[in-house]
Image (cartoon, rainbow, N blue to C red; front, side):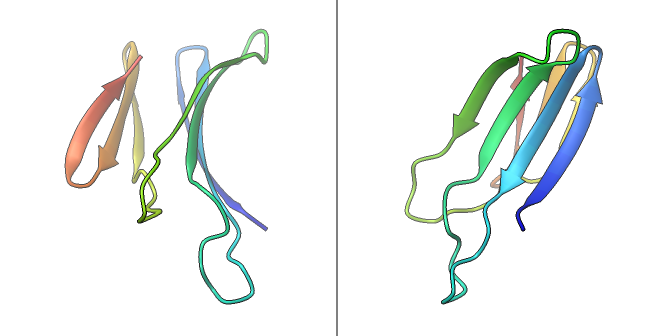
Length: 79
């Protein structure tokens, strides 16, 4: 079963899905960060990194008007 990290800011649910490991213990797919409108349940956007290292985005912290995401020791503000 995959693991999901959640955060809510205003009327937007932000969530990161961690893929299930393969039988060999490797990550089975990309980490995906998504934003969903809680009123309409519509996905507003999704983002995944194309890289050889499939690392998680880090902690999700909702703020007024966006979301702080720790990512490679960097804070990103996504709207």
